[in-house]
Image (cartoon, rainbow, N blue to C red; front, side, top):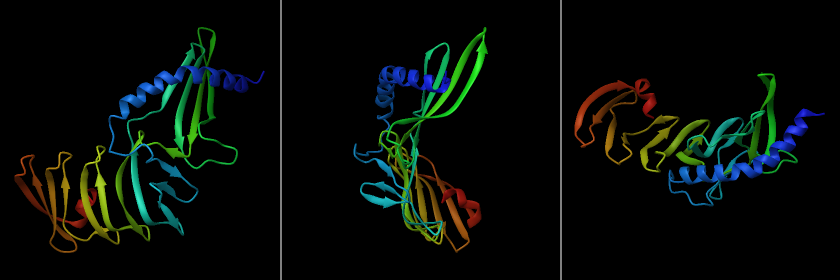
Length: 228
């Protein structure tokens, strides 16, 4: 008997029945954490770019980032496990990438299968990837939008919190900040004011939540990399 084949059949039957209620609960929980994306604002994966709101992003030219760029992150992990019985431990994780030949959205691909023995019983540990060529807006949020030129940030960039509130706006030249910029808290209050004194010398001023300046320090550009 082909164990993997039999486990695939069993898993598909049980998975389709038992996962629905679990998945609905997850969707209800995490869609409350939205950064104002509409239902049709999915990210679609193509071979050499991604498509978002009918615009192409994240293209490479000669192996270098170029043109419009979109950075995103995921809401807390939506991967899940299903354990139909004490003899099976099945885990399914969503993976997002362009589809290969003969693949379809939602296909489950076996990536690992092991066995354990517990009290003389064989327990199968099986991991699947469930592949999609798009990410629906309930699963991700935009962290930044801007441009790349010759693999370096260029022009105006906007950075966002998970809620969609603006974190900072920076204008870049050759991957470095060109002018002064500010970093805001999620509630909109200013947290840091970064002032350019010269190409390599910057002043970093900190503010409390009441908007009161509490300190200023002179730093060289290399010391504030984490800020831009």
